[in-house]
Length: 554
Ligand code: VG1
Ligand code: CO
Image (cartoon, rainbow, N blue to C red; front, side, top):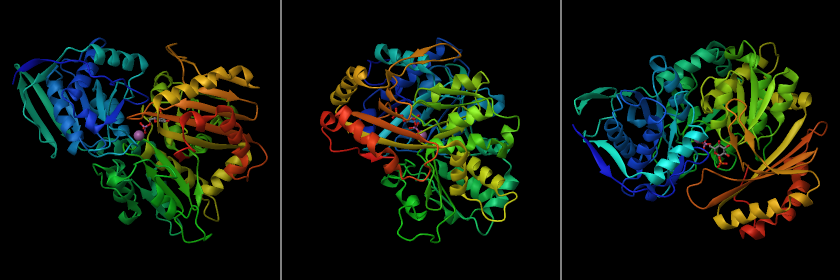
């Protein structure tokens, strides 16, 4: 095969957001879309590293258009003289699995990877597609990379492509091409093998097996037809012996069965119902442990019998009980959360006497701290939890971590210590951070910007600390501005932020948090109601956005 240089023109809107570029499939179908973005990533790589002859990973969450995009990316990779590409079978690799493979397969030889996912956004011909670049540490490209990728997308005039045929990615194996006299290799690899081995090195699987086989402990796992299915089946069914019928929707579907593959109380409704949350019948025969992951399996939701664990509490509980996980045997180096995430984990860090970091929203901001050996466990309020075992948040890891904590708490117990008991005793010890997030999805971009301007103009009339959050990375000292408007008093925080993951229009997120040391049994509405009322008045959000209320509350 030969390499051709193809003339192209910039395509607007290829600026990576919180986690890559996300667009409607209909927009991605325009000519050169994938080629332009891939070439822009490669141009950025070439400015810093040697792409020629390298190994990269390309795969995704199995959503619609992934397979087509993979074939295009393979040709552009060959055209840019990449030496070898690892592709998960059928193009399937979860986001955490890509991170493991980049970091560890063949000793961590891979230069980076392209992940095809729009995460928790819906999929299908009329829904969303996404693409992002991960660097050699296995994590999302940091801001200085993504800014550079964007600059290339707006100045690109040419891409290189090889005229190799489509590669069969449905069966494992190696295909070698001669491209302009040099070898180009595609290796189709097992989608779960590397990831599962990694999990086995982190957790005590004997303890986990003993827990899930207890007759009084039933788990219910919902993969939401996303990419976590094959991983959940491999680990929970094949290795741990959980019956398959307790692992729901474990076949990845291109359109996620028409749903939002988003593990929260709204979109994971079947699981929420099965766990008896909001049910009339108390103490019914509900499962003891419920879990769900998002489309690309980096998010998680943890539920107990008729009990919801907020993601902010979840990461705090895991940090407080890290002794349950062999990987953390040496103790925690530090903990971290994204800025809007509740401060529950801060109390744990203080008690442990370790550093607590606050970073902007998005997993890419944790990477430097982990690489510098300063951070062990971190999380986001948006159902993201993880550790320095990789450089992405990790949905299946979070489920295994929780089960490890439950197994640990039950070591010397005469009754089943479940999720709710664990969380309630955590609150007893540390206090409780009541938390709620309002999302105003798909609103007019101008109106959203106007809301933020209006709020900034009200900083001076707020009786407390009001500012626009700005972050200086403690490792490389890079500065990231405009990461959310904060209104903080000693008792509570309200934060307004524009989402960076939408595929059209704008989404406004409002985060409410109140800390209580003593009143641990209020409903979230009781605890936060007056703050929400204040916020609605102060911001005039409904009028400015022309809405009657949020579209999603989590
Ligand atoms: C959202 C979440 C953020 C998360 C990001 C990617 O971003 O708020 O915490 O890191 O999604 O998660 P935003 O900019 O829309 O608020 V995923 O699972 O979609 O990769
Ligand atoms: Co995700």
